[in-house]
Length: 125
Length: 125
DNA sequence: CCCTTTATCAACCTTTAAGTTGATTACAGG
DNA sequence: CCTGTAATCAACTTAAAGGTTGATAAAGGG
View 1 (cartoon, rainbow over the protein chains, first blue to last red):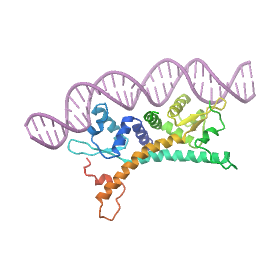
View 2 (cartoon, rainbow over the protein chains, first blue to last red):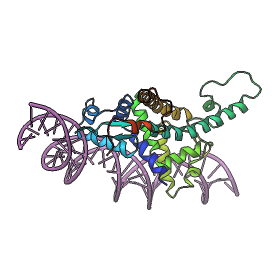
View 3 (cartoon, each protein chain N blue to C red):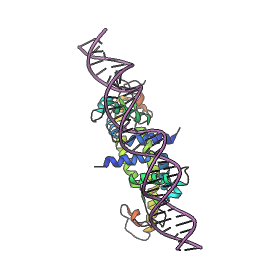
View 4 (cartoon, each protein chain N blue to C red):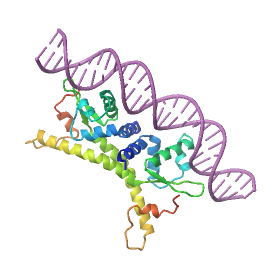
């Protein structure tokens, strides 16, 4: 199953400021390659490649309008990424909370943000 | 600071199946480098590098316990990633809904999943 | 004390990614 | 038509990423 490869591609696609800017722009609506390239100091060929990367990652899809190729954002693909992250984030946060419960047992004040670090048994460098 | 570079590093860090598996494991609690390396068919040095990548990305932090270096997941860093994605995902979804509202105006049935694609004005290949 | 465990440092190899320039395709409009 | 516009294809350069082996450092247990 290439569930893994899908995540590889999608996260890698977002690991580039140009591609993230393209995603941000597309969240407001479709745009052509030329429009997407305009804000950047790189060639349209380079932007075209970035779009191909986003498309291979399943984050965008292309249509056709004469010689233009409008690019569209796929929100569902973004949702799959947050789903992956949240699965582990929530698990970790639940664990923190259980730890804080134990460590603050019998006390009244709620632990401050980031308390888990300072309350850890191990020492920092 | 450089918001962009932080996202670069964090997304790039998750764009690797080994590092994602490490994150998944750490969501259940801290682990040593040796423990983290055990499931993989690569050397501990390679895993150590992966952990350095995750640490530079701010996704994990290390403590010290004798000659061991337990690694801990930073859930807040994961939260920053979902925050970035959701910002644009929600914007795009809101736009879809407005489009569907227009295109289904006066009709009673709710649009099916993925309707935005099929209802687009442009044609697919 | 030494020796074993745990992990990092260092040098190197190979593959891939981002960018460039130059040529080519596809389509619309005068 | 044929000209201009929009975008992709192709070949190449450079830099970085992921892996390896081998050596080194730091800390405890016998």
